[in-house]
Length: 127
Image (cartoon, rainbow, N blue to C red; front, top):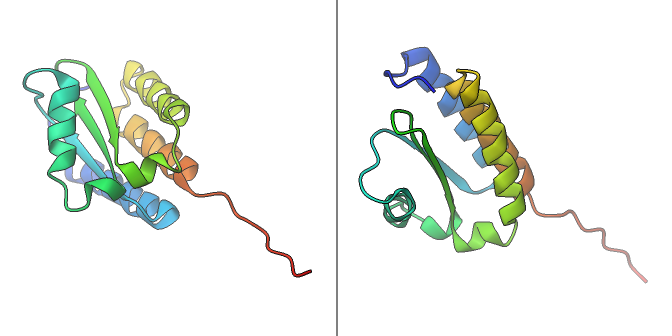
């Protein structure tokens, strides 16, 4: 992962990925990219709790310098998104990060999280 600042173009790409994920899943997505202080999971959970609607939110925390990645999901999101599905998105992000493509990894991970967070479609029939 590159530790430098993202370009305006890269930030715009991430913003588009986030907006698309929100439209797909109807949940809120946020990305924190910066220095994580203290234990990574506790830091990510504090940030997530401070969001406007944490129960309906997904937060991806990346510290490129420390090579840390955390994903926190709210209670409503967890009804649709399993730990295994989150783990798959994390692996996809880590793979891209290892190839030096941080923005591509974040975009792919966010997309996967949103696709998996979409509830199953049900068919109703009339008897």
